[in-house]
Length: 231
Image 1 (cartoon, rainbow, N blue to C red):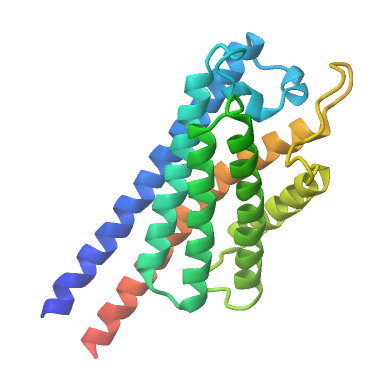
Image 2 (spheres, rainbow, N blue to C red):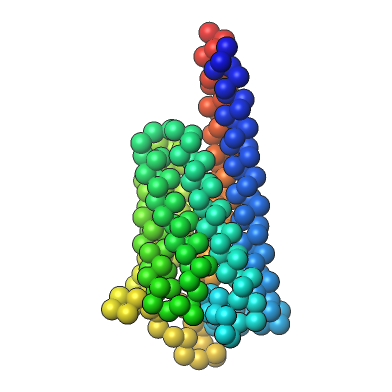
């Protein structure tokens, strides 16, 4: 009888986590969009010439605090989604994915706490974020190839794009200074900036995709438990 009452509450927990992720991801996207709009007085291709991390500069960016709050929301989004994945207790591998995701979340939160004004700390936490992203999405790709149960196709393809983007950033990074080359001219596309924007957007969409994948998975687990009880 106890387990019968435990399952609906287990499902409710994951429904709550799903919606918390959605809210945090939307807050993050809103924060980034507002600060971008304020920087360029509208949305234009100039965004491809501005590195995302420069929007967090309290000295030069008009709405840096909004951008940094957006990063905090994105990091919290990752942490909540990974707590949810860990609590699903699927298998040991999903726990490794959850721990790698928590590393990403903590790195993003620290990037919001230490924007580019705190240069040495910012370089460390942004490099930590890059390494964590490659680790997380590589694990998810393995999960998508081996047990498909934990990794639906949309999540798999988003992870593939994110790994390619993150490896691209890793190749662009100067590992001796832990910094990226500056965007030289406003007449040429800055590939570092474009790749940073791609990575930022991919992570927000990935977070949402994981939330709904977890919701679907918790429903499957709940119905399986009910079938076991019936027999």
